[in-house]
Length: 118
Ligand SMILES: [Zn+2]
View 1 (cartoon, protein in one colour):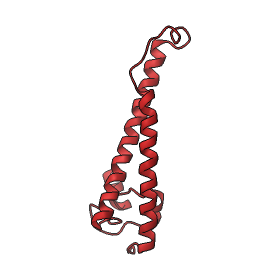
View 2 (tube, rainbow, N blue to C red):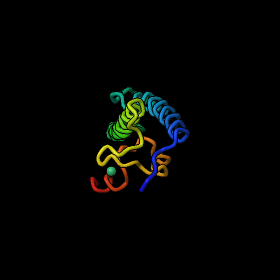
View 3 (cartoon, protein in one colour):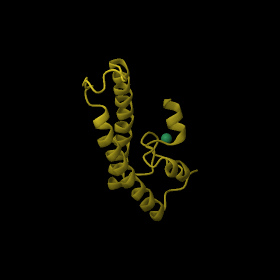
């Protein structure tokens, strides 16, 4: 049986989530520039082929999707914090282990429910 989070643990995790949201927003702003449409200016053609440029763009876009998904999860966790549901599995309602939340503060499911989904 997993114990409920203490108020101090919840506050620490809330700070981590805020910091994580900030980091992810900054990373998204930065990768925005690299995921912008490929320019074929004369300076780049030659050493960097259009194929390379397109491949780099695809990688930047894939990375951005991962960041967006994580940011979405972090926002969900912040919302659950406000509503007082944070730290409880959204599927089975059991408390999520503190060690799991410390590794992944945006976790919405306990390990059992998460592994059942994967
Ligand atoms: Zn669960």
